[in-house]
Length: 427
Image (tube, rainbow, N blue to C red):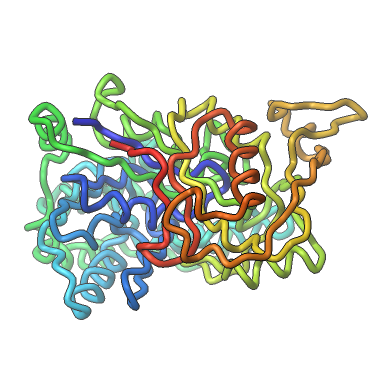
């Protein structure tokens, strides 16, 4: 049976939660492999809507084991709050497993994130202010705090002291903030130890054994391809690797065990935060997409920037992830337009460019080259098969598939769990 990677093929917010939930009943494990509570998923089950920030979407599927892998950064207060909220709604969260090697977001990471953004002023990145970047920076600088450190008070104190030794100098001398007492941080973190202990496991061993035993394991990325710290629109990116390669490093499962890589695409394009966005619409069409699509960040609460579908980005996502399939979401949002523009290339310095420019400067100045496809007015939310779609909607999907470089295997025609057309199996 396969090990699958499911990830965002644009700037995030493509509907990964719905796609993961759709597969949740067919898989044995769903694994978050990067990011933290800066990644939000909205999942609609019947008349219930769930907003997940840190937990894998598979936690809503009774037969599935949700796993937080070693590549994730964990804010323990957010995690416990999210678990408590789901438990109060009757969701069983007891199967959750957390890698002992995952890094912890501490109060000083969140403080640093916020004051740094304020200090940058107009040059700010547009972070969520939740301490994600500073936590990953500490991980790379080898002064991070890991989940397993909660269970050894002596080691925890040593590590917090080492991390704060330099940070307190920066806080006091650069940002004019009061120094943070290591003992205070340790006391707060130790308060989470007993609540988390039962969830912590050697998830790398467990997942490799599961794949070897023929279990179906789904690796779920947060954010999207264009927010990858290596392959995204740097520096306007996240601090980890949402691309397919991140699934291996963020879980400890090798690439030879991955059989399918599924990219989630919106039928148009959105992004949150600063950075270049060639197809962004600052007109009535952009406002309509935002309103009809409910384009507000699950985690940030910020309105998303909206634009037409960008096939250049889709092709890039296919290439850097080795995508085998696409899940096209929110096709229903486009109902009602007489014709729908699709960006098929860019114009850069008067030249047509059909692949994503590697230069930050070129991408910043890229202008979309559009082709126009006929729209449709029929309600598609009740469609159960591809043939149920209006002819123009079918043509739109086929055109996107041809432009993007991988087959479209599923289509979202509404927000509900059952409002999905499955064309090809992912398994």
